[in-house]
Length: 400
Image (cartoon, rainbow, N blue to C red):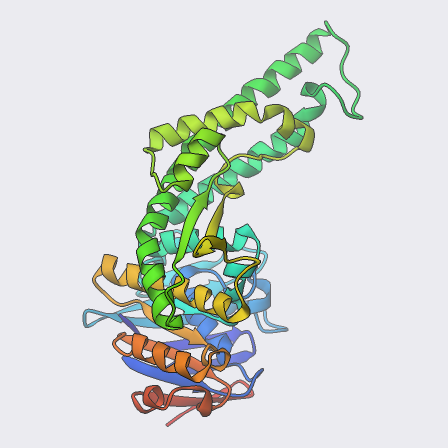
């Protein structure tokens, strides 16, 4: 799989730009702020429908423009597929596949698969649990696009349940500033029963959808760990034993089994989430938020016996984050029988010379690698010599 052509309009700093690509290595060279990362961000967006830099689409639209468009022509097994995306902040985005409209933008997922590593990915090691949850969920979708629908449904159920907890708490909790209805008030009793019934319904939905997402994450963690260990060792030339375990918000007994590497069946996970929600009800009513479910879980990264967060050096953290992305690449390559596009955004500048050479060796056989660098000297000579180079200056792309 490789991207043959990228065309953007009113995307980030570009009024319009076209980038022609081929298999092998392409290096985009330009000083910081010239727009090279914007191009690889567009490729990543075409693959995942999200940006690795921002959480909303508004910053992706050039200042003064109403919308942005991305077109990516993807070659797989000798056949072209064209993804067209229209980004409309504040309104629904639109998508076309091979010039035909699709009902939902997520219907284009799977046409292009990419793994992008950027300086922001250091947050996978040093940042909040949300960064690691997103890494797992994005990889799930890249592996099997249907998980995009499961994620969306889980987010919808969680939002509805949280709204009910906030609205219904004054009727159900024993304390707090809200005035409680008088005991024996028929209207109050009916309101309380209605809230309890609705909360039970959302508990059921959350446990059902959450167990699917949790089961998929646990299988992914199990499958990814050997690739992480080997990728970290290869990049860092270390045998520190990089590994990861899943920390779950369900009750202690199940959480311990999961932390030990067990992957319970979905029905068992559903029951555990349901029981944990029931046990946490008083706390949740007091706080007005859902405290149990995949949205509260974490991926614990370790070097040897110590957690990487807080103990790993900057270099070790960088190698760990890079190892996670290379592991994701190897997993997708093995699952799909095809290479995803590998994007290395300003990576080599952060590595010492030996690690640069090791990374260059590791990616040498990838079908397509897109590298960005401030100066050619940041990129190993063998990698530069093996492919094409394009210059990016003030939002203009020069190829030759």
